[in-house]
Image (tube, rainbow over all chains, first blue to last red; front, side, top):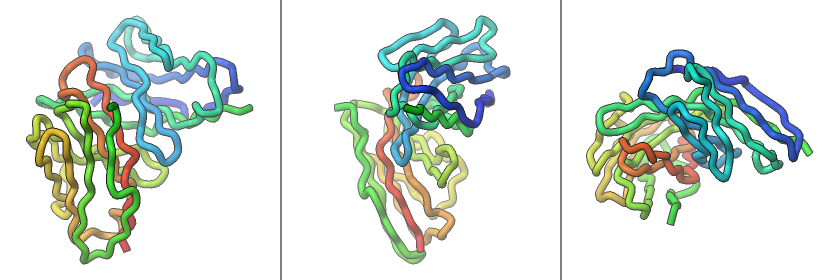
Length: 112
Length: 115
């Protein structure tokens, strides 16, 4: 399984962009990068995923480096409700099903 | 309906009890998952069902017994649990486990305490 490395914690001011980095240097060519977040005591929430192109949706943008060894999740205008643990995950295919292997994640705190 | 529901929200049980956790989705998803999450730790995969068949068992002790009676329901039967099994149990579902658009939708979890 490709491993991911994320900073343990980050702070961001409300209204500013939050840029969360992730290293996945052992990722293989057909593995996707997924981002989920977990707000305290709730189930994880899907944010975005990508293979090699940059992706954007209503929640965030995902920037993947050309060599695919790292990526950055961007929350363009962070709010207090974005305070959560953010998980960067490389999706591993296993037979007909997919495994998500969660690492320790980054605890993002958005400050007023 | 993009919701995964789990019941009960909280469960307290003794080590000799038998109980079940229930998970339901009506999104037409054909892959369903059980995860276990201890306090301040990331979720850990326990089981995966794909098209109502068990496809992954992450070497979970037999005191946890999953069941997928149909494509919308997933149960986790609990028997003779230990206090260290106390955790948040999360259910998730996804399209079919293999397509590009395969994000997992998680339920709110069942907080289990074993006395």
